[in-house]
Length: 327
Length: 192
Image (cartoon, rainbow over all chains, first blue to last red; front, side):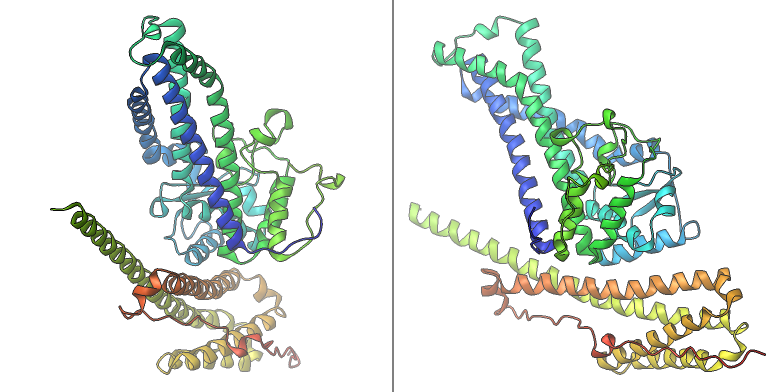
């Protein structure tokens, strides 16, 4: 990167929202393509794709609705978080209250996780039913300004309805995987009769589409998963930019990200199932976690550089050996 | 009915729905601006209520600093009274109160017993968060005003806003006094 161009957080927020919607549409299109290929390849009629598409989405939605309503309770219990009130952690409650005012959202429930590894997450289906959880390590190691940056990031996830959005993308991705799985089982282990059906349509084209359906059924779930990870990264950038909109102080969040990423302690309660929720990926051992396209979080250096772009500061150099320990 | 008539009716229905939608959106935004303005008042009052506790907590220790404590008490009384006068007077009084509080905390630094006192520390945190809350509620107000004013001026809303009597709101500006550095008098009388 050459000279630092100054941009506004409004521009960053708008770009992030556009890109996440585009990515979600890509997954929906992938699902539609798969449904069409299977429908046409099996029955020779394109009308078959509609009930297939609808059926599998409804099934996934039913599973997802359960997650939407019961999910945050499960996640908080799994992370061994306990709720805190006014008297237990006055500074934390004060910071959350200040930023809830700045963000224009109701005060969420505040939880603390007893672990010296600094980290935080937010959960909740909408701003009225939201919770934020912070580790004791983060409370000890960050100063008030950095804590504001982290809480701003978490409240932004709530305000941007990220839990719902990622759940929606999850429904689509799950539908792709479900449909592909059912089709492959049906073709190779189930009733061979229907796959030879010649109702309507030309035999040649139908057979070709059938082969396409097989190829898609193998590739689409992987592609959809990659897009889902891209969405996760996009929403992290969005939460960073929205945090600045709320605190008007990029340096607080920048300091916090560098401190959290630089800390090598392992968060005991985190694992692959919950890693995507945290502000910085809690899985610290390089071998254990994915990077690049398979990562749930963007690289810390990129996140810091986007924050620096907001104040026109020079970006960090990814090749700098001193920064190799991060991320 | 002829097709042309049906089409015209459908178009009219769509236009009416759009106008209703835009009107409701403008009303909602204007109400949010009103709420955000009221929130600022709430935060200012909270700050007024905290001051007497602070003065009581430090009074016993700071026998010599009567003038500083008196300044704070007097500035608070002025701020409460200014509430009835008008926005400019409120702003000036609140800034004077902020300046007097900063002087007080600068002086507290010289009394180690007081500085470490848990009550004083807790009150200091209370005042920090109150100052932040006042600032953030003003920021939130400005954000709502921006949203509302933008909604008024973009096309096609601008066609509806005028006829229905929506007017733009003013931002909350930092007062000229806010950019002045408050004077802190650290000279101490001889200790007994």
